[in-house]
Image (cartoon, rainbow, N blue to C red; front, top):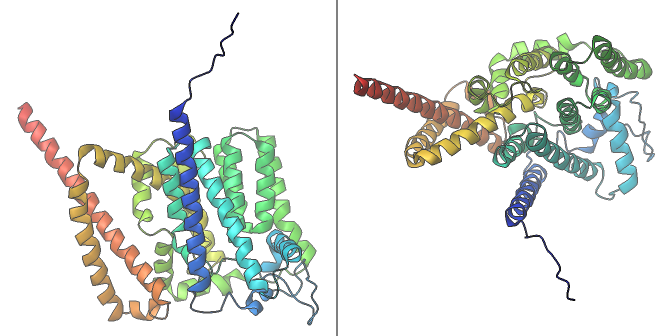
Length: 418
């Protein structure tokens, strides 16, 4: 008696989807590698890359001794209060000890790993927790890592230090909120606040979004505030005047502050309001449009009062509420344009407007007060800022043209009905 072996048919569509996802992730990894290569090899100054600057912000060598002090006595404010990044970085530096290349290479490698983690968590959050398409999720990751804050991460005036770790905990907290994991959310909240105090924004989102009991919300608030207060008590150095070092500087240079606030997200500042209004896919999530508006306002106020707006890394904390909705909206618009066969018409409008407005902005930057504000910036940064301006003008022109065509079609349909 012969026996036959039954085999299930191979699910080729699932294999293709898995292969496409791996291709997307590999391409994202290559993009991050390229961005870090630009940061390392094309930087124009040593404000951040000098060992002295990093040591003053992160760790302190005792004379010429190789030991590190972890708890931050004698460091520049407000860095002594941001304990976790310094602790992890010191552990990384001791473990891998990349000498003779020194602290700068250790800092780059450590942040490269954090950037990869941020990309993975963002992609996972979009596809698994929010249910966006892979295209929209990949677009979110690409837009984040091509942002001004990432492309010039180690260039003055951005110079990220503990910020990439803060972005990782921010995404971890949002994933925990979306998946109803209160314990993991509290872990991300405490670790995030120990990394950077502005991650108390997670607590605000939790109170707005979660349906947990008041007792549980109060418990999370106690944990978050304890993580905020504890380092300041342990370090014993509370002298820090944000009005003098932050608000006064921002108000003295309002035009410069506005330029760098715009640079944080560029054209997405214009796209996000349309996404909040027209795309309902994120309603009822931690990225709900109403929550997003309040979060963006709070982050801008915190950046104005407690930070420096030209250092876009603080404003960029709003990236989940601006980049993710904008990416979902742009992905839907892209599919609509392709289905309608209108891509050539869009390119015929957008490309000339982009090139023309870029030239106009370039001329204005050379012969106007703009030159005094961005003229001392590195060449690549100036080109990037002008490109953002030109892209924003092209986006406005395309949006106006789309609305005009929609209005004409509506008038035409009404005429036919009559």
